[in-house]
Length: 156
Image (cartoon, rainbow, N blue to C red; front, side, top):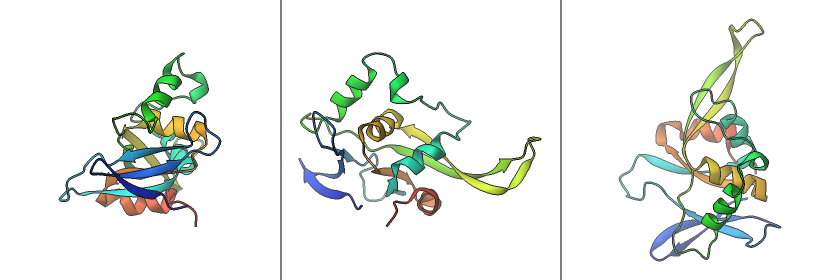
């Protein structure tokens, strides 16, 4: 499902639907790198696939499920993402790479898997998945965008 885009206060935003979520049914996100000469791209991804790739990250902090967050953290993110807030949240900014799987002996195998590392926005992404969002825009360096689409691109 392609995400709708709109202008809000002169800023281009991507509208993420959150069916069945209360107190709001959508949120909006803006680009991290907003200037035209940036080397970053916005990619619409399947959120479940992205989080599966993020769970493989061994170089960065991987958050637990929203159910295991400290009291008040989910409420804070829910408030932060509220479309009625004046501040427009940034979309998640990630890096993406491919790595070989390991065999039982720890030796690199033949098959490859995608690995996503959040630079910003991991709480937002995990909360939106928990709330029911299925697709999400993320910003990634242009050299990693095609690989991200290969592993996490939204299904037609």
